[in-house]
View 1 (cartoon, helix red, strand yellow):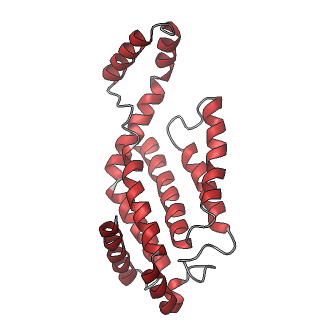
View 2 (cartoon, rainbow, N blue to C red):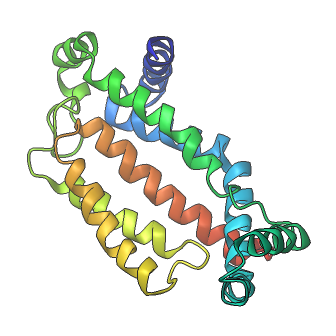
Length: 213
């Protein structure tokens, strides 16, 4: 993981150089670059989620029809996926690819050497009301924004309303994510909020403009 952290620091410093010499802006630019690079996968993922939502009634029919025949159920489900060109794991790839990026950024922003760099850079370490983005948000506004934007990004997903169980998860998950982010470095929180907002924009664009989901 350390090589990835080193690369993350170099990329972050590159965006720092072109981002008005401010690390908060550098993180936003980094997030935009990552989302743009992953857009083809996001498009495919959103289309797969829409396809899964479309065949959900047929899936439930098969589940009821073969509730005592699990092998028959599995076979017909696979046939259903094949018929509609659905990959049940197709919606997960962008998320999986973002996990190492998030971990690398987390480790980079909390590394002692980078903290010293921020401490010596003065105003370059500040962003909005946060005086040092290697420390947690003192007003806890960012965790609240993380929770709200997480909920919003879920709502814009194809089939985002879902069934009752899905709706319960959609309410609980943002609170949980907001809670675990309370102690994160503000820089990580900036990345998370920006990533959620860009996800919303991409999903809205794909659903409304592409006409393929």
